Image (cartoon, rainbow, N blue to C red):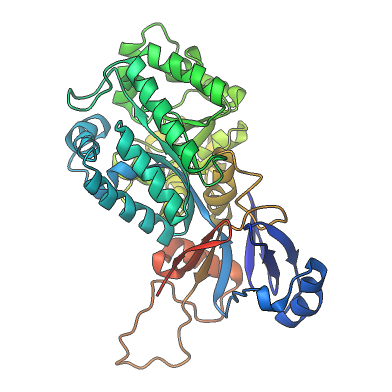
Length: 461
């Protein structure tokens, strides 16, 4: 088979390799220079496997196995609004589109329809792990967890807390109610998946303006008790930052608000981080807090361009998020290509880049290899699963996708209208060129099979 491993600056190609996965979905052997006959004669014997009990999936010419994508920031409850922005920026968009949609999912039949489609679409795009925001409704949040578990997607499911700022029809009654509802979802998920192996709760204060000081303090205490991960937003939009200054006049910065109330720690995932100051980035690095980079949403809502290289060089772990529905696509591959493109903007003259040191501008561009790292191993680090997913190594879980790049026939008839996908491989490309074509042209049609912990959870028919 063909398989690909990732480091930040390079891809490692495993040609003619065998990855052996046990019944629990764990990788127990990675054998290079290994055809099927060698696997049968040596590897299976060493593992004590019988050929009768082994299922084999081969990557044919033009196919390769790739680690599953990790979406570090996605609002499942906003999925019906993908591509809908109007003329809004962040705060207006929340009131016009987002809050009404989220509130409507208190209808469980509607929530079931929305969440099922969201999970199915993300799996079809190769997302094996997702950090989801649900809604303030406990039952709808629990339903999202149930569906992720039954459909086999590895997920972090967060019941959204917002008791300070929001429309009257969609807001928590009090800090006590917000925390009690959060505990209820935690216990529901514990009953579903006691070890949080596939589905885990994630504490979810929406963002600083939406939460009272009491709620943030309460979530901090709950996080210390449970050691659960946490997620929120930071510095996405200039108007949002001004609002934080108004609401928290005694805080030095947006990041300082979270730090003051004890939720800026190594378990926290901060989405966006577009307009961080030097001091904020240093504080985030010191607290070992992670960042979900959402380039599609940042562009779609005119929020700005995050300085990913700058964050990485400060030692901050970064992954990619689709930020559906601020982002218009549930595809992490789309997020990867946009991460590459928007990083180029920081190197261009004009706009925000002119305010950056020339040295930073010159090295700000991300490579194809780097954005694929952010989409997999980087994302695994952000969600706290770097020891389980994101690579094909012994002891890790088989969270993977089988990718197919369509080969253009040697002879193409003029009246042949068959188009199997948007990636055309002519046969003379090197592997790195094939991967670049996939990143810039690929979509869900290229994702033939998807596994989570060894379970086949998506297959094109």
